[in-house]
Image (cartoon, rainbow, N blue to C red; front, side, top):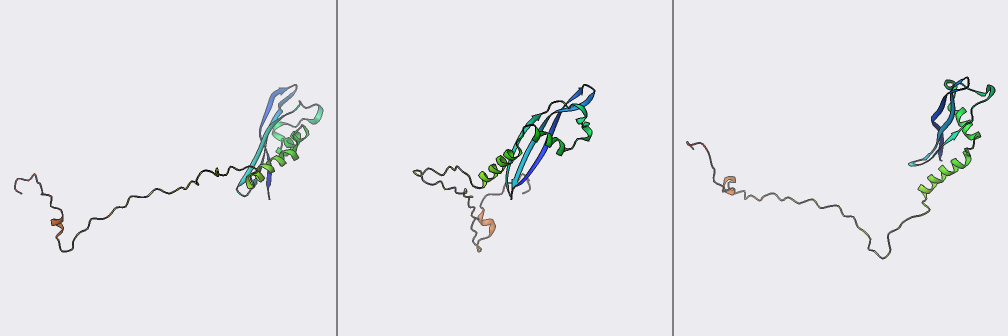
Length: 144
């Protein structure tokens, strides 16, 4: 089951429009979809004409749902965008185009690198350890 989520990411405002302040003129929106580990997204911007009459809502009183409604009534085709996001996810689940290996080349086999094998030195149990290493002992001590 695909989950669709619409969000408003940013609002652009005119600081002053006639007697009004912080008048929204553009909304940046995003439609996200997810299903398991798959996801799709579509985003855009919608511009609005300045409000007239009593239709103005002060900036601090706006809701995301209200601004999304403006987007949908000003050209954003909600059904088409959601269909696009859904198709992105379906194409990840069942890719419509794939790139199999070329049939005339041998298959590539990935082999992990071999770690060098370290063999411990063999010591005869009857031979004293000092006899195995026959390096002379050098000392700086004159008494030695």
